[in-house]
Image 1: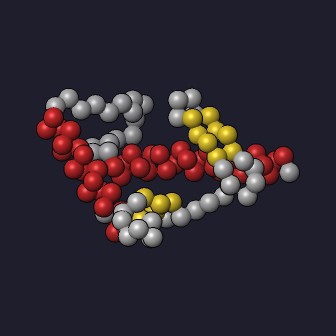
Image 2 (image 1 turned 180 degrees about the vertical axis):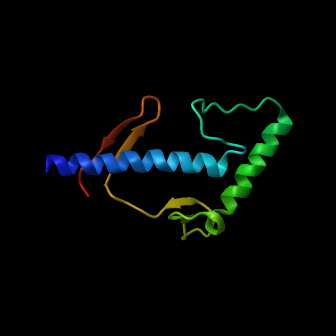
Image 3 (image 1 turned 135 degrees about the vertical axis):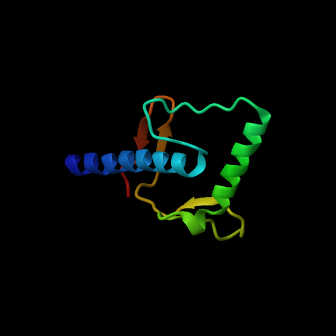
Amino acid sequence: QLILFGLSNQLVVAFKEDNTVAFKHLFLKDYEDGTDDTQAIYTRGDLVEHLAFVIEKYLAVPNETLGRYAYGGAGGGPGLWLCQRFFRRGDIDPGNDTFDIDPSV
């Protein structure tokens, strides 16, 4: 059971990391993989341009993505919703990349 629990948690960690990279490529204008993931915007015009890019890409999620991402259904609005659940509860601290995952499925 301990090995299965560890493998399940590793899947959650890998899923989070893979999706973070996918979202960066999808929503950050001119994003390229590299050792330095710093993104900077220095002018108002660049900010408006990048925000417009994010909004355009976000609204195109159902038509462009290959993964299991779609808008939530009840309100009719485009709220991002991930259609996959493995654990009842899990917390991720982005400051130090730690995970607190409830092992219950």
